[in-house]
Length: 186
Image 1 (spheres, helix red, strand yellow):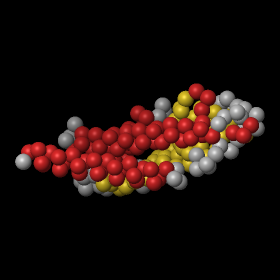
Image 2 (cartoon, one colour):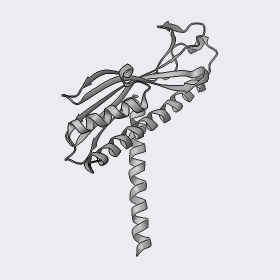
Image 3 (tube, one colour):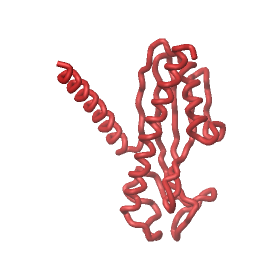
Image 4 (cartoon, helix red, strand yellow):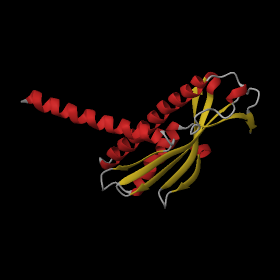
């Protein structure tokens, strides 16, 4: 009997993970990743907001440099971040919005754009960086003159997807840990 119960729990867990991955892949099509997370209904907007602020401070070198909107009253945090995707690929920049209400929060990661400090012929130059374009594009805007292959653009997207997944999981874990600690009066 114990084996049957354990097998049943494992199957339910696997379906839950596959559903999350499926939802994640659907959001990759338009490069906007969003979800509403329900937490314990006794967790206040202020507690969730504070957890989100802590997460920003830990995950970005300076929350002050990242955050453009920090509105505790509305429970809203909005900022711009970036992923270092390595070597010649440079960085992917994005926006992040976290909105908190009593018992739930919502995140949105969007506006993914690849830039690099190393330029190539034909690449747009902007504020010290060379712009390669939105990840919504099927091909890089400026790659025809750079010597890069289409497979490089696919690699950039795949690396970015992994970074997005890790960022989302980090946010969820941080928000969950903080609410548990506050609930237990640490």
